[in-house]
Amino acid sequence: MKDFKKDTLKVRVFENRTIMGEAVAEAVSGNINHLLKNQPFVNIIFGAAPSQNDFFEALIKKDVEWDRVNAFHMDEYMNINADAPQGFGNFLKERLFEKVPFNTVNYINGNLEDPKEECLRYAALLNQNKTDIVCLGIGENTHLAFNDPHVADFNDPVLVKVVDLDEQCRMQQVNDGCFNHIDEVPTHALTLTIPALLNAPFAYCTVPAENKANAVYHTLNEAISEKFPSTKLRVHPNATLFLDEKSSALILNI
Image (tube, rainbow, N blue to C red; front, side, top):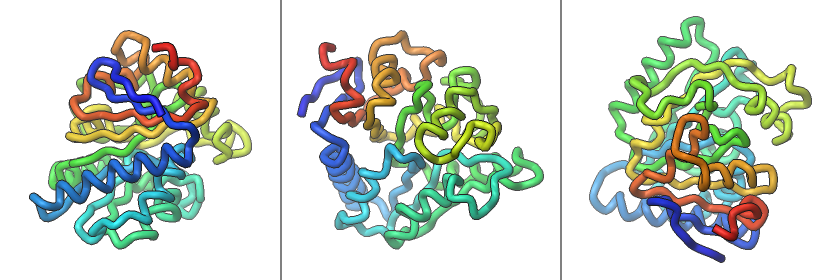
């Protein structure tokens, strides 16, 4: 294991993704239990992607008062079948939300006739339940949630918005095995904005696998800007980036 910092971002590198996932789960569950000593509930935003699977598998085994945790997620496709396994709510439901007894689970609905109304509804939920922890990943194009470079705004005035997805983002969904072909990947989605994610006091970013090595390199080396949205993690006061040997391959000399 190797630990270092880049600006304010703590970076932890592990031998493999299983060990990495256990470390993330230990850190998140420990913080949940710490926060619950001083507040009745903890509000957490979870990312939905295969990169989070090792973390989820370890997290559901932790000793946590889950009935004092409110769960949210950070993005959802528009106009996808409600039962489609590629839907992010369904992904999280199968791997996390139905595995432990959360106090509430709050889903984004990408299929409403007026998606802007859904953005306002979900933003109101976030305002009513101030986020304590965000658990996220980084996309191959360095997006956070579905804030691809062309729509990312570090000073976004809203918490949830409708976005179109860039080609690299959509191709990642094929690379991850979620879709067979890019033509099957939806072109639009609802996403929490960068401020909605990173206003959380604590951020745990889990990024394993070889296909994320370039994104990790850009995250830690590029100038902080919307061109590489994940660079914003480097100025968060309490963010940790968890990597495995493969995703860290290009940055070990930093």
